[in-house]
Amino acid sequence: MSTWPDDAAASRTGPGRAAVVRTARPTLADVAVAAGVSAKTVSNVLLGRAGVSDETRSRVLAVVEQVGYRVNRAGRGLSSGRTGRVAIVVPMLYQPYFSELAERLILALAEHGLSTTLRLAPGRDDERDAVVGATTPDVDGVIICPHSFIDSMLDGVELTRPVVQLGGSQATRVDCVVMGEHEGMYAATAHLLRSGRRRIALVWNAVGGGRLEGDRYDGYVEALQERGLDVDEALVTMGSDWDRRMSGYEAMVSLLRSGVRFDAAVCVNDAIAVGVLRALRSHGRRVPEDIALVGFDDTAEGRFTVPPLTSVNPRKEQMVGHAVRMLVDRLNGYDGAPRLVRTGADLMVRASSGPARDE
Image (cartoon, rainbow, N blue to C red):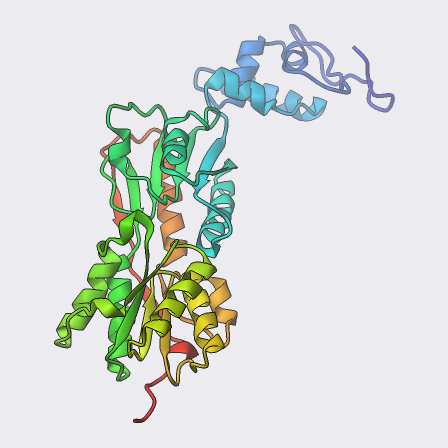
């Protein structure tokens, strides 16, 4: 056993105990010999297991400190069945909403001593594979921020580790945090109506056939109906995708070329709204004087557009906090029925939705 030249030495010895010697790479076996116990006892102490006397526990921990032993986390994972790692699954990172969620989750999990693996899952099959473990075999749990994932995709599957869904439609098979989509879109539309706008375009997406459904659409419809207005399908414009600025640009250009009169636009998300803003300005429409504009997600990008973007804040910090808490509960042994948490939504009013121009 090689020793460091400046630290060859012994500490207290006694029956059943060897001198404490600091090696270049101390092992669990070195700790066991120096403490006069078995390697299994050292492992039990380091894992915090019961069945070890206070005196033995103190002696082992003292030796661990003296020899400079550091836990081999890979080895601990193999022996305990735990890796201390969680998979964060997002469909993409170029959409600011998902990149912000991923960063918030990484930091929040680190506060619980958990490391993370970031997995991109751009399609339905990719999301399912990540949740069931085909592409995430070496993690203790999964938090998925879905694009297409719905929990009916888990029919016939027995999950072997905790899964929490963050965002998307309500799940029943796994713990789920649902944002305030309905109340958020209702608040955005009602805000535009109160400002005097009446012809409010809806910038949607053609993904999934462009079906006009879901909580965000219902919030838009409810706000109109409260003012005695029906949905005008001529005011619904769609881009080829739901998460790219170019899709918003294309959708707005199509609406402008149609010649349909409108005085406001509410967008399915901020990325779309940024593209819409570019299209309006490039076609000589002033925001908000001619067209008021509202987004959804309250991403940092929207605060730096010209003018700054009014947007719905879905309380991302709360969403992340609930998701991490539910996952940690599961990792710590909670085995109850799947839980659902609904966060609210706040409309962040900025210059893009100023009052209607005087006619």
